[in-house]
Amino acid sequence: MAGGRHADRGESFGEALLGELLDRAHELPPHLIGPLVADVVERLGGRRPQVLLQDYGQLLLVPLPGDGLADGEPQLIDDSEAGRCFLDARPVELPEDGGVRVHLPLLDGGDQAGVMAVTLDSVDDQDRRLLRRLSGLVADLLVTKHGYSDLFFGVRRGESMSVAAEIQWTLLPPLAMVMPRVAVAGILEPAYDVAGDSFDYALNEDVLHVVMIDAMGHGLDAATMATVAIGAYRHARRAGTGLPEIYAFMDRAVADQFGPEHFVTAQMLQLDTTTGHLEWVNAGHPSPMLIRDHRVALRLTGPTTLPVGLGGAEPQMSGMTLEPGDRLLCFTDGLIEEHETGEAEFGEDQLIDWVNGLERTDRGIRAMARSLSHTLKRARGGHTTDDSTLLLVEWRG
Image 1 (tube, rainbow, N blue to C red):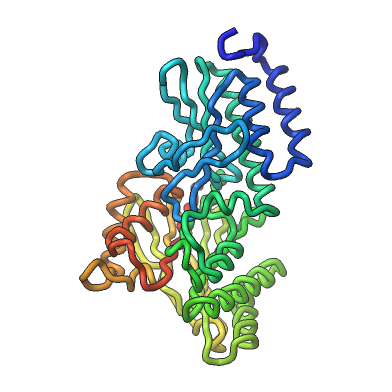
Image 2: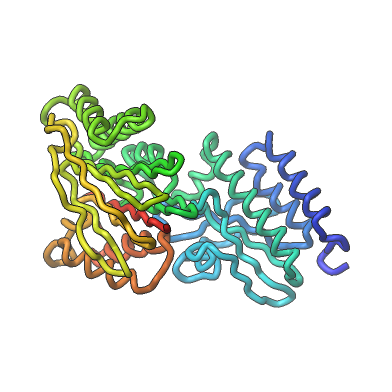
């Protein structure tokens, strides 16, 4: 039979195949994920399987090595079918000589590790169903095995990374989360030398908790301070305290560890994902922007307090109710204080113009965050003198 296709491709065959994959995955060493995927794809009648992982700079999809997996050059996210699958988080089918090349997003909780690609003689709905489920299992494997192996880090790293950046990437939650009511997507630049910028979020029942910080200075000192600030934030958040109490706990932690002349700016938010009610506290950080109907509608201004570590007064909370589809853009000052090539700094007006222009493309939140960061990076000639971090939050209603 052509391509080694099994005669029975119904639900019972699929259940047996995916069940075997789950049974074998439990004690599977990370470096054997590729061979396992290749074996399953062959039994589905497929060939030339690839697992493509996003690099840290979010520019390339890099083939994962492994016996049975097809090799090849990294593919540009902005100029490939695999990249289109990655950006839109949807399967892409491409006819080719002797078959169909199928690309599937590797999704885990809305975050996306990369793309799985396979060639079949032909594709029907049963193939699509099995491949979709297989890609979901592969994504879960990559996420769980990533925690105790350097293999995937090595594949994703396109250049040397500073120690400070190593610390920051280890500190981060997944860069994206897409759920029915809410979505989050962030990006850090420079990816291989970021130090003081960081963010964190958690979806606890119906409430989304978000923080963005910018620790003073550069290098290891800034990375260490950011680690303490995020650690203190998580500790206080997990204790169930409110935003003013979280600020106070972070403030004491940074002051006790680093002394009175060190500080971290912070923007903290809580969003009720059932009602859209938003509350926030600002500790010397740039005010987020509200994007509504594809345009920046307003800044989330309000009372502020001193940055974390300087012993500021108890912060006052601000609040508003979002509309379905609203997006919040949180960012660090490096995004607006950076200079265009040979010109003045970007400034808030320039940032708003870029946001408004890109929002009209109506892309998903992950693609939007990536496009905005890379557009600004190109405008400054690919160079940066400070960390430039952004985080988008979308209330989907």
